Image (cartoon, rainbow, N blue to C red; front, side, top):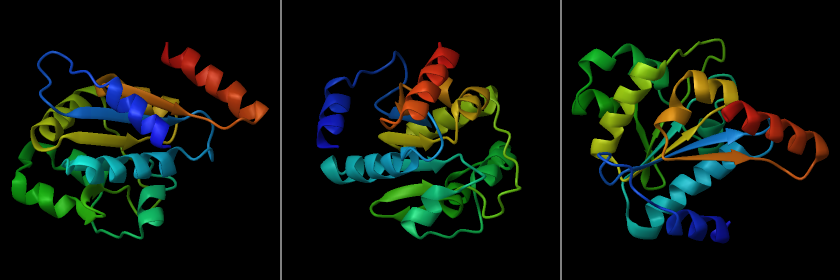
Length: 181
């Protein structure tokens, strides 16, 4: 994992006009391959390495793995940020996020049937808001469709597609990359 962090840091470039924040979109090539674990470790490590202000966003409303892994609960979630977007301010934002391991976390809803429809415009506005407040943002998505339809893949500086060495996972990952292209 350390090698991955070193490569990400070496490849770190800034898109014109985006400020100093780097946004990563983590996509599993196939469910269950460890993408959420990688997203959580990446965010925590980036916060610990240089004291960066880091936001970890769980955009997987079905599994909510980030809250489970980090043992976090909140009455608010990503869907609330989307619904309350037009009135977003610092006070509301602090209530929506949960501090954990030196980073801020925006959780997925507790109820797996809660649908979150972000959309590209809102994703862009959220990203602009995040870029003003954080040095690093890691968005954990459930699959390539959600990553693209929500706009999170489009707003990311770097898209990380995670897989394992199983044949089915490699096949699914190749298809996910084809879809992204």
